[in-house]
Amino acid sequence: MLARAVAGEAGVAFLSCAASDFVEMLVGRGASRVRDLFRRARAQAPCILFIDELDALMGQRGSDGASEHEASRRMKTELLIQMDGLAKTNDLVFLLAASNLPWELDVAMLRRLEKRVHVPLPGKAARSVMLSKKLPPGPSTKGIDYDRFAEATEGYSGSDITLLAKEAAMQPLRRIMKELEALGEGASVPGGDKAVQLAPVENADVEHSLSVTRPSAHLFADKYIEWQKEFGSR
Image 1 (cartoon, one colour):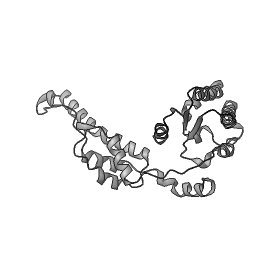
Image 2 (cartoon, one colour):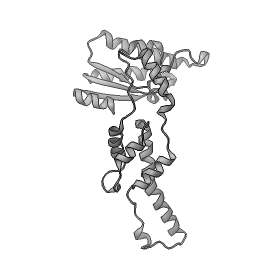
Image 3 (tube, rainbow, N blue to C red):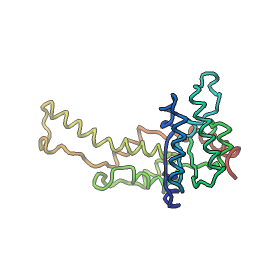
Image 4 (cartoon, rainbow, N blue to C red):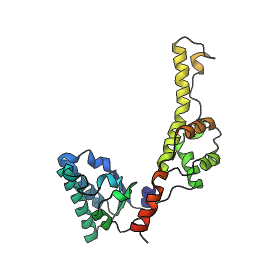
């Protein structure tokens, strides 16, 4: 979302891809897929090209020893070549990339990333806004106390909050499935099948979601700080 917002503020085209888009095509096509992506970016210039999960695409070469596939090495080399090409031309293509495990990036890739910025976890106000946007809108939610849950999600990343909201949104669906199963088994439900309808997400649903989900980013908190001190941009 941050990369898309940058493109919106700059008023330029936005292209996005994830490492999985290339990994799925490793056998014989990964390198050509990289070339096609940069070709599209140049055609839409000025453009911001965003690559997510960069560590999955550009892990340290040779880290797997002889087991690393030749197609994988060619793809990594092609990506580095394309980045060098951007630096040597006047093409108005700006590359942004994200990584949850920056310490696994290949050193050649690190050299080409001119700015390396640690994006901290969202603060309370940001978490409140994210919850309000991730939970179902309008009448599908009922009196959600966003400020209270923003306080309770200290240490949650954006992905953690997305998972939390999805789990909360599933609760009304699980309740209606139980009612439908009861009807199918001949049990009486007040109002019959006309009464079976999807209820809004409530505070209790978010509370349940909090009880079954846990923040994940804190597992690497110290490592992020150490990496930023050593490799981050000043």
